[in-house]
Length: 386
Image (cartoon, rainbow, N blue to C red; front, top):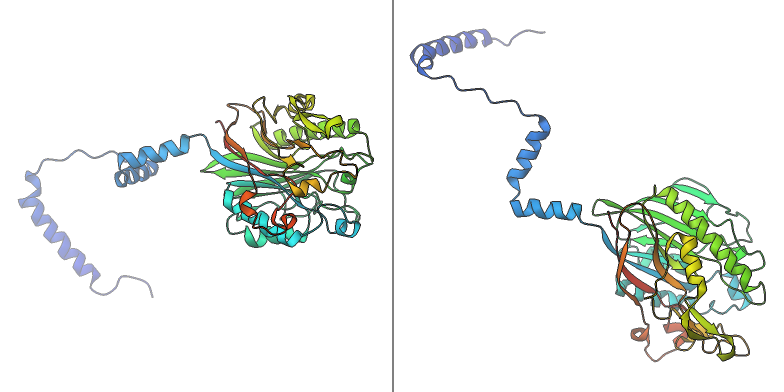
């Protein structure tokens, strides 16, 4: 049944009569006020918000939004080799459970905003990501080369990814405190078929991070390693340069020309070495650095780069890789870097870069178990220009 409820019409008549009487005695003597202009909805929202915020709060929020994003980045080769290497007795395949725990301690102690892991091939590295590090780094890419296709893992897949059971994953992954808005996988098309790297889907992970509401692009990678006795060093060096060119073209395209921070084990020796003196580092910078910078289209290392991330003198795990004649007994070099691919606008700047030591981990036990890796991780603060 439709219509007005009983009594509604009578109430309306009474209201009309009272209003008429008031107008006769009061309203006619009042001046008419000007009508306020109608504000758009957006203006009402802004006005209401500004009324609730103090000028200082508004200024702070605006400054945070306009400031160039800054974040700390770690590159860490954790030496968690594929399980098959244990059967072959490959150096670096030992004490994996203990070293996983030690690596997690180092990562949490340094507390970088973004961590690029290399050689995170096996189940121990995956457990470390899922258990010890997940709370600190809730945003993580998949493992490069573990899958060559499929939804829900990567935003895009590119490159020469193999599904063969005889090819292992690439061992690269990126962990972040900041949300990952996009993640892209590249498996390098260039590799040296005479080396063990050919049996790995080596490549790069590229992530677009949301840092205080602004996009920052970061790529983690692991390049072709030298393997004397299998392939000439000249060949592996050429492959590395081609991989850097692949990384540059792919990352720049995905990032729409924005600068891209790069981190990882690039296997580019920073210092010259003396083969006649246990491959001790020389005082000069290797010519491979300038070639790498050019191929990358950016900066991998600068004249101010210092220190060793692979040290057979001080790191007993690195010494496991010496040959039977102790030909590398004095080998110390820089193989790991945090740099960038140039893009439009202001380029990234770096500060407070340092190589992380393992001294605090030593408790007098087995050094091969207490030290997590044959590589030293590096940490740097990166400010990405707008």
